[in-house]
Amino acid sequence: MAIRSLESELPAASLLSFDEMSAHLRAVGEERYHHKHPFHLLMHEGTLSRGQLQAWALNRYYYQSIIPIKDSIILSRGPDPAFRRAWRKRVVDHDGDATSEGGIKRWLKLAEAAGLNADDVSAGKGILPATRFAVNEYLNIVRNRSLLEAVASSLTELFSRDLISLRMEKLRQHYPWLSGGLDYFEARLTQAPEDAQFAINYVYENAQTRAQQELAIQALRDKCDILWAQLDALYFAYVQPGWPPPGAFRLQDAES
Amino acid sequence: MAIRSLESELPAASLLSFDEMSAHLRAVGEERYHHKHPFHLLMHEGTLSRGQLQAWALNRYYYQSIIPIKDSIILSRGPDPAFRRAWRKRVVDHDGDATSEGGIKRWLKLAEAAGLNADDVSAGKGILPATRFAVNEYLNIVRNRSLLEAVASSLTELFSRDLISLRMEKLRQHYPWLSGGLDYFEARLTQAPEDAQFAINYVYENAQTRAQQELAIQALRDKCDILWAQLDALYFAYVQPGWPPPGAFRLQDAES
Image (cartoon, rainbow over all chains, first blue to last red):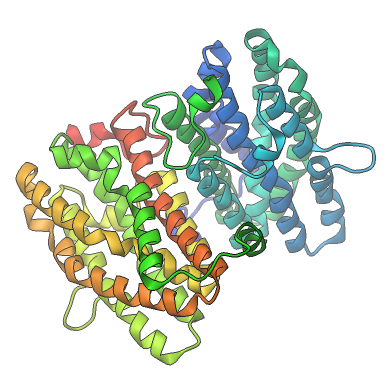
């Protein structure tokens, strides 16, 4: 139905060139990527408390923890061995191997640097229900939509390098007690652009109609919404008005 | 894993009686049901604007629209014809039949009474991403957990009659321009308690261990979180601080 309605709206629309498609994807990022979210703005201004950064590290861990699961779902849907060989790098990047501890472990180190207990974080103790709902939607997307859209939903990695560079600088400047926990971001500075390059090439080569290109762009929009909603929930629960839902992590736990 | 950890925590725990189980379920409602959510408190105090009530009616429509889908999933998982005969009443209640327009149509009448266009509402134009994520999690639960837990997740209906009675009184008092759109709630005053009675009996009869009873209670807790998160998202976007995410319904659309 989505395809039909797009086709009927774009009867004479022709296939976007690689540069045109890149421009459309970047426009989505400009509008919807979470670099503009007020929670990140406060983080970069240095006005978040240790408790608020703990809430962020705790909730974001749930997102980190499902990344290799969503990439394994994509692996399971890729019929081509060459595609799977390329994509499995992502699972290794997050789960680690004999030579590297992996992104999940690195995020736990960040959570520990923030003053949290790694076992509590791994267990998801006190994470916001809204975090689970948003993150689980990422799994729904890679399970239920086409492989093209599943791959396209990873394209927020086109924008992550700039945000991570800025974040590392600001975290070191304003929250020096976190500086020992930034290995995760350091690794992503090179991993994310490599992954984004592969994914954008894949999307361009495999979207064979304008309608498919539009579905890929929509998948990126939806993925941006998933990242944005996680910060909305943090802001609402822990910044203002400060009403975490029943059962969630509370700031006084951290501040006391 | 969930069952095993509950069993190890409750080695000597015995099966709850019907009254004990009911008390546990009611305690969950007391703590987590959305009757205490600040958005509802403002609604009942009469301080919400027409635009804020429009945002509520629009977003809640998405929840209403998936109810017969989630009940159809439960139907599809029920091996017993007698169970399916009883459960399909719910699909009829929401989708309607020759003699009744059904709950979805009634909710659209409420949205129209609030000043929205029914076609825009049906199309989900401008709903919050966080609404979709929370509501889709309800579908995840009824698809992926046991049938017992899927049934138990409906038990918020144990608490809905009191909230709906209060809401109808307060809507008529504070927002008389909505009074023509309250048929949905009128119907739920009798439907919900009948459905809750069937479901609580089913859960009691089919939870054969204390661990299963605990899983059923957890499903109700998770369902309460789904309702709560929807109001959190409305409050954050439209009450305070008032930052709807990119692409969502904006209050100035309604107030102008």
